[in-house]
Image (tube, rainbow, N blue to C red; front, side):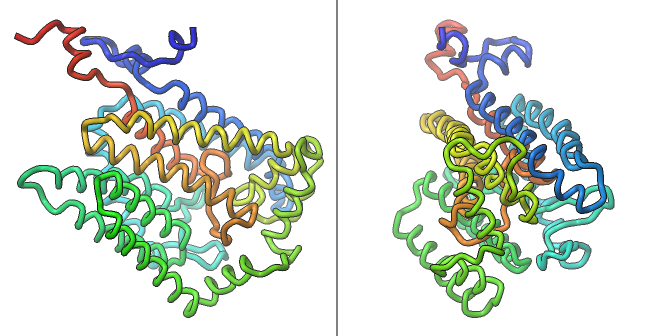
Length: 388
């Protein structure tokens, strides 16, 4: 029965778009994505009222805004998941150049909202963070370049993709946004590895990243402060990490109960970067495990479907999109439990924020499209009959 309900089957010639999509899409991953979004709404309802009250707004102001963002993001996910890889390649390339220009103009027209890093464009009623949209677009653009290098007379796509990754990493680091910069270079490295890059080359890139990190530590007070705080044996209870750590410990296995958590009243970013701390305090370890399992489901199923994909563009773009999604979730939760230095990175689909939610759904819509089951030559023969 499970196979009948959840196993995707090849598309049939002449089939309508929606039935074809339903037959070929990975429904387990789609269900996990929707579940993560709904959990995000639940946690936004729990974490955001204190901030709204402090700002003199309706207690459910941020909750209703997140629903509005979802009404834009979720339809985009479904539409993109129905698109063909060739159309997604064109859209991804256009989106990459648009996001790149927006990122380059941030120092002149952007704002930091008092956080010390110029990452946003303020459009009065909403703000836009170009880096969020740049990540999925970069995965598609880099995959296009790498796939082109497979052609006999193709361009040096792998080298070009590396140059683009270095430029983007530098631009993000100058904001400064070391978390997003690390995501870009890490996703490129994983895609390059999937494209058949030698381990020695990737080791050299890793050594270069360590060297840049060492330079930043010795020349940036912002970086040094975060690294020193991470390495310190003592946790300052009045810092974000201190509040988050205490909340996770208080939650235990089953949590303190819905609405009974205290961290949302003291932690400034409880509804964004540290929303997993709210989940751990009020709902306990159980909900956190469910969240991690849902993220793992999306990433693992995508990679398993991409292993046998013969088209290098689909295989590389899907790998990049899946790894971006999984790594961002891992980094966010790793920061909350003090396994990683503070990064200022949202939890995909769960943290409050329009740019984060819409960009995540764009990337996941592309990923679902890349991992849709397509007929192999032997299956096409079964459908159409032997080719004469």
